[in-house]
Amino acid sequence: MSDNAAWAPSAEHPRAGTGSAPGTASGAASGLARASAEADAWKLTDADVELLVLIRRFEQTILDLFSRGLLNGTTHTCLGEEYVPVALRPLLASGDFIFSNHRGHGHYLMRFADPEGLMAEIMGREGAVCNGVGGSQHIHREGYLSTGVQGESLPVAAGMAWSLKQEGAGSLAVAFIGDGTLGEGSVYEALNLASLWQLPLLVVVENNGIAQTTPIQLNLAGTIEGRVRGFGIDFVQIQTRDIEAIRSRLGPLIERQRRSPRPLVVEVITARLGPHSKGDDTRDPELVETLRRADWYHLIEASHPEALARAEAEVGPRLAALADELIAREPSRWSRCGTGVAHGSSHDE
Image (cartoon, rainbow, N blue to C red; front, side, top):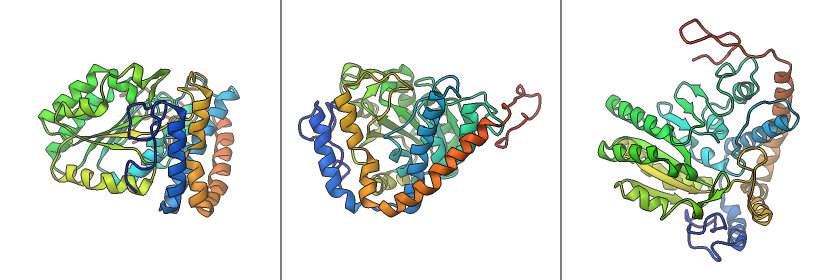
């Protein structure tokens, strides 16, 4: 399958791809028809399906806990975008440093497969990966850092990439950002240095076509590709949700980065099924419904029904039991930097 085959332009992506009726919900519907016809060609392992389901059910569990008044603060789910970190999982090495953003639960679960530590962190309970002080957005663990400050991760990732280049082990700094982050000047400062110094920096732009409540056509002049290539940086756009096709397309490029350090920006045309955070979706309901009908989940129902059934039977009850158990736990405790190891955390690094 071509990396441009399965995801047609929608009202969220008026300048993406070459599908029919760009700028309308019919474009997304056209993409659904083509993707459904090709779903039988998908080749996913049971581990792929299980991780997809884990991320999906984790996000839904968090939203349920918020709706029941059991969580404070906010959260930003990656519903609809789960396949992006799943596709990248085998392409990343243990020595790579991952930088995530406010919509980063899927990135964390891809890296650590640790729903307990992350859910405890969001709930502020014992066993929290950061002792309850990071919450949903600000997570630090060995080789992993997320932030809710848009654009903050790119300069730090560039610095990490410089350090990894000095070590010469072929490791990458991998930064996940959204299309809305392209409005931050720090992004371009980081890309400039990455190009000048040929840094092993992989930037994954998860382009869901809307920055909080502002459609991309109202906040981004030109194209993401044009901006990236202006720095002389390699660029590739992914429009399919076929995980194997994504790996086939990106695998050689990432391996080349490891052998010969250089930056690479990957734009993934994707869809956000939920609101920006918990209840602030201003999009046309017809468009959202069209995106839901085109969700990867329905394609896996058709292509991998047995693996999906097994994953659902295992993951759903496990997360429900985990949530109930965490509700009963004591609040997490922490100590200031330099005053000793925090109490109650099973994830100290």
